[in-house]
Length: 129
Image (cartoon, rainbow, N blue to C red; front, side, top):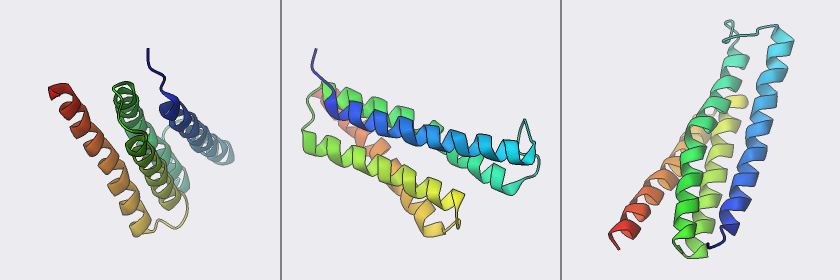
């Protein structure tokens, strides 16, 4: 079975970012004593959405990356997809967690959707050979 070295790297980095986002939610829950939902606390809601959006998009992107790596996609493509995913998720989360700057949230989603759409098209292209 072929190795998936680059996917391992990006999965590991994404796991660390996921842990950081989870800890931010937990810390805010402790601060506000809100055990469930957001309790009307906007900072908690923003942290929850940063965590939730990450959780909603990253698994499929990593799966696409792994499948493409297993099928022999050139490393340059894998690096580009992986770096776009990390940068996109970091920009999006940072926007939600700090200033809420629209440009970084939009840029984060554009990069993430680019990874999902390009990865999806590449998977279909590989399937059809």
